Length: 363
Ligand code: GDD
Image 1 (cartoon, protein in one colour):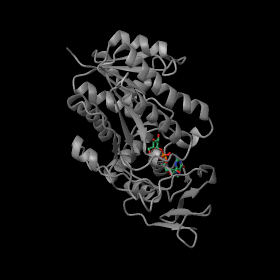
Image 2 (tube, rainbow, N blue to C red):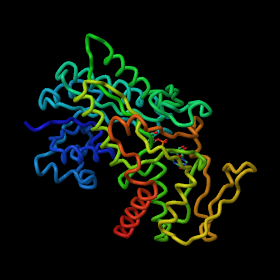
Image 3 (cartoon, protein in one colour):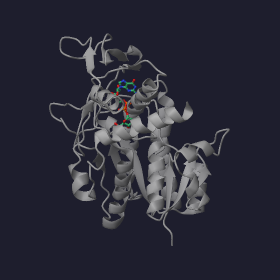
């Protein structure tokens, strides 16, 4: 019989890539979509390349909400999937600070609702819960220069805290002999792609570079360009999500994994890599940094003399996590995860070229 998977957050970046992967692996995928006045997100599905799967009977959308246990019960009863992937979440770290109740409800209570629905309706199922490297927000970097499964969780803000609470709940249901929930958690570092939302710094930059190249924008306004992240390619990361669940299913061992490349770069390096795709021979110079080389409100990047990046304090984060870098050893050894499948440079090149094509198509 065909395997069935239920994916929440299916119209987001990770949900779309995971659905494509699962369909290729022979799954029938049921995606959860929230009720809006435009319930059937035709344009979005086309953009995510999911519409054809629907037409071919490999993928369906079901209306529901993580905050409506009734809808979750109904969908699980109807399809009786073998695997659940909970990717739906409020994911923007800075915006999360402005609406803590919604973030906590979706990211924490929503995850618990789904797990409880699974335990009631299909307790033999395996569930994947998406966590985040923001769990390491306040890590002592002198002790934990790279973060792995043994690094203590010290979330810095509303978003990290909501995911931490979801993690505690998953662990509790997993350990409780009454439930023995088959749930595994993926602690994913930043992962990006051509379909990343434009409010995240990678896509904000690659889209702006395309606009600047087309003469439609002068300059990019950014916050802390000294922030350091471990940025990987989202299609590679969804492979790891499935591998985690498959391993749990085959071995019976419920293990959580950090997923990242093990390489770190600053937002400055990201900016330069993106401009380098569009302006291969340009001279790039940063000006206005303080004496220690950190950015200030006066920092700018000149590309062939023209100011192309400015700092706007609006994008500074009071609870900024300045540095994150993954130690993916366990995933390499146990999941056969290849952290360098798509290099950072290759990912940024694809994103910039994709945005250049989008800008020229809409011109
Ligand atoms: N968004 C944004 N916009 N970030 C900026 C900007 C800007 O103009 N300027 C500098 N940054 C810095 C942020 O302060 C942060 O340090 C870094 O760029 C990355 O920001 P985002 O791309 O917004 O991602 P994030 O690290 O906050 O969170 C993402 O990764 C997490 C995994 O660690 C999200 O995808 C989370 O949902 C995910 O869990």
